[in-house]
Figure 1 (cartoon, rainbow, N blue to C red):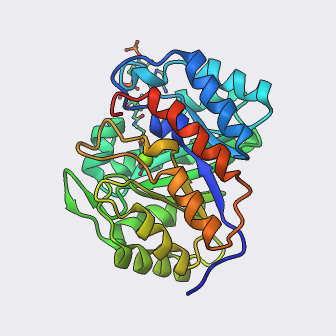
Figure 2 (tube, rainbow, N blue to C red):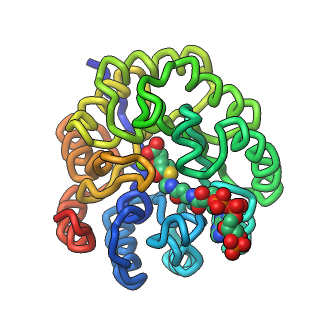
Length: 286
Ligand code: HMG
Ligand code: MG
């Protein structure tokens, strides 16, 4: 079996973990969570989303969270679905943005009120503006395995979105199993093909744990040469527009597995474990 010497874990709990929570979480509690995660060694975290507060009320404090990340001195990612979001991110001096486009157009329509093609066209202007502002650009391909509205998502549909992201100069492409329907065979095969097609592109794996396969999918993607993964503390998470999707790959699970395999992540396993109760205390699921 192949194990890289190093894996980057990107903590997405403060964003993906909390965005779907039905009851408003105080900004002070989010800050406490971010601080604990920074102390656990995460160098890069997804903490905010400059989305519409009407669509996702839990992310309404994106500006204040950004300000806190600057005070803490951490590198953070902020979701930007459209130009207005990017303008907010620029004003907040976000160092890294994340655009997200569904491989399934049916999902993209539910998520951001645009077809996949319309979002990709908007990305052209967004990438140019983000680059002018020196921002790092993460580009998510959501519903990259299956979709609750469309059913099967083909690799060709994923490729079409990746082609555009590569042409536009994404700094990394994050392949999202938004509804958690990938399995290890699919994960291995899709990531292997993507790596063949785009040898110079940095890919990230983002698995939701709906069917308890997120850890197995991560291991399979590692076999295909992927060295960056998103995870969420306490296994929190879910997308409001992906019905039935469970939380993300749990940070404590992947940290433990990689530690036992001798793969360096730079995170402190004990501190990660200690942060789980705090994260879960913010969620209505636990
Ligand atoms: P819309 O309603 O089509 O927007 O929403 P619009 O352009 O028609 O504008 C309507 C109103 O929204 C206007 O205000 C705009 O100013 C305002 P009004 O005139 O009515 O007062 N507006 C905004 N306000 C704040 N920030 C903005 C913004 N844009 C417009 N950026 C929009 C389009 C994209 C805003 C909306 O659909 C939205 O916010 N969607 C959010 C979707 C979301 O956050 N989904 C969850 C994250 S994705 C995910 O979880 C998957 C991922 O984890 C990867 C994976 O798992 O695969 C990333
Ligand atoms: Mg997600």
